[in-house]
Length: 88
Image 1 (cartoon, one colour):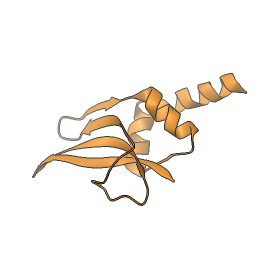
Image 2 (cartoon, one colour):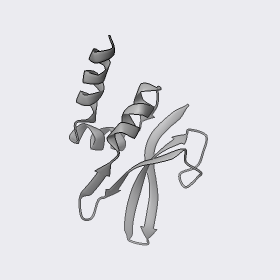
Image 3 (cartoon, one colour):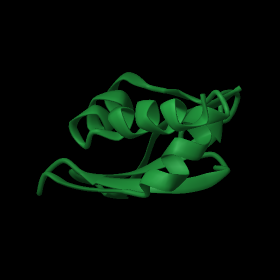
Image 4 (cartoon, one colour):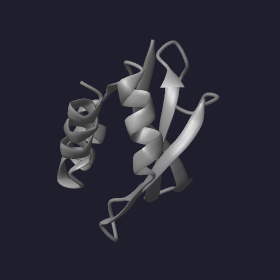
């Protein structure tokens, strides 16, 4: 199973996170399938590759709680619903 979750980067006391698609059996800093975004909690900056996120969500990937909140704030799920309406 694939999850969309955060991967910690940066230095001590200055963490930044990559949002990655990764197998659930991998550890936090393990090998990811694809990088789909970036999140900096200190500067409160977010970059999301929305087409890549939509691709993994359509294939059945499950976002973690934090990634879900970040995606919801960026209105990714409204685009997912509109894409599903087009195909039905």
